[in-house]
Image 1: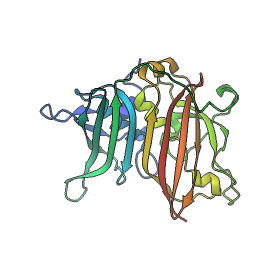
Image 2: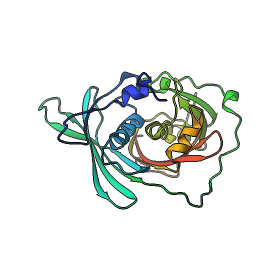
Image 3: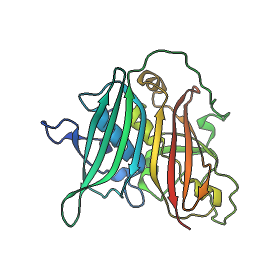
Image 4: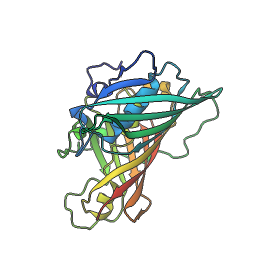
Length: 278
């Protein structure tokens, strides 16, 4: 079972802001998941999903989550509000906002918006049409040591190919990365953790160009192809992740990603748009 002692659960801890306004929560950024200028975007996405999963009106389980990073999240407290905007027989549509107090005026300003779909899944014909790439087992891959940001220490990253360049000399040839990944310390997989894991890949422009330019996610959409029972079967094991860009143009590039369980089940796919500078 997940315990509150795990750093991820500490980072995702939300407390009800107002009993008369269900869906409004108070949270706080966590130093273990700090990035260069703000929290790791994966935990921000996971926070949006956590707010939905805690809502008393929740129907079903996550199917899709889109997170738009409107501004940098500052260190400190924040308010997150999740609202079901439409509930159908088997699907539910959500709007989420994360706000922080402006440093000068104290007024709440929106720094993240999100939409999501949850659904009551039913058993149907199912098929993995994107098989997991052939790869050695996680134990055969060396752990990647990255010290540039605190959040990277919260994941056991074991590259198979497409390791972050050691020399920034402009010699990159493609943008494909494959790696094994899991929370560190190990933690049973659930939907918020999977949402965060969908964003663990470093910017594709760094690999494609072998040039470390400023870059940051603008928007990410994650599709969940597994239900909670399938996630529970993963336990705290590794996932195989794959990420690749499709186009770099005029300051933005896309990044597609897939995450498979060790058993080869495709658990989630994601697409994000990322800005970059020369």
